[in-house]
Length: 163
Image (cartoon, one colour):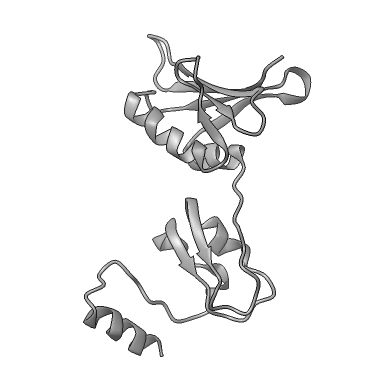
């Protein structure tokens, strides 16, 4: 069946699709992260490895499987870690603040790309603060980008509760 599917895709000139036959429980980590994963097996619930191999905002299609469709929810922290941020100060309980470090410069292109990913987990560009985002459901939560200084490379990201 996998050979027939691969041949049909080639015959239809789909060159951006791969077919893999085997135990899908572990996913396909060497080829991820994926924009979408289609599950076609009978499962009680989707296995964690393939879900972790989705790109931020990716889709897990379970319509051909024998289970209920699943919505993959990514937290802000998970998104930041996937984007290469390192948590360097966790003062959420005491001060309502998390501080992350990233090695890349906070260029306009970087911030635009980050903004796209943040929108997928409920954030929007802050209307009043430059290089900042606010959470749509919790507008008192703000993310601010702080460019590194002259003696540093990269930048900092502060996730804060206002108030």
